[in-house]
Image (cartoon, rainbow, N blue to C red):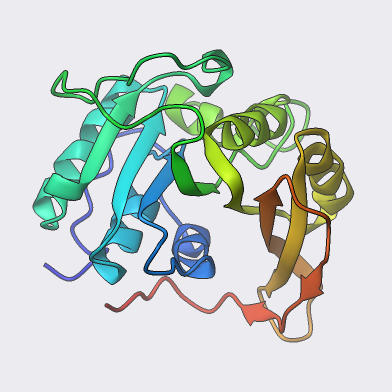
Length: 234
């Protein structure tokens, strides 16, 4: 099976876009970075993409919707990375304190503990409640609209990361000031930024940002990326 073709996505859920693949490619793990958390993993596309590229990684996908948590588990096994992918059913809003490992969909303990991760990735909901047309599907609404998502995801990343660990996030370019402010609130310092454009003559639609936990800001702005298709090769 050629990834991401054949990826199972439950009926009514948000369909992945190239944003997820751009995020998976943005932070390339070093040989010493072994544990990655994917916040709001959905059907598991970001974590699975990372595992297919980096054979030394272990990924934990955290997801509050049980049906999506199960889908991520199913997809990881379908693409041959099930032994390195744990799908933990939990609400990021309620992991402010982690004392014991969370279970995955099989009830087995996962390495989800504070300060356990080298890298955390996040593709949070982009829109606030009053923005845009709301889809009928509850799964799609929760994936797209949430006033508190940015704060929740950044707080979770800061909790899960090791000191100087790396946080990668994709977010609307128009909300970049809010993103930087929220990162700072959670001691996450922006270090890299790359804008994504739908066309070469258009303003940025989204941005990829890498932040590090507990370090000083020292931002490097990289060449832009153009959002051409959903292709992904390993």
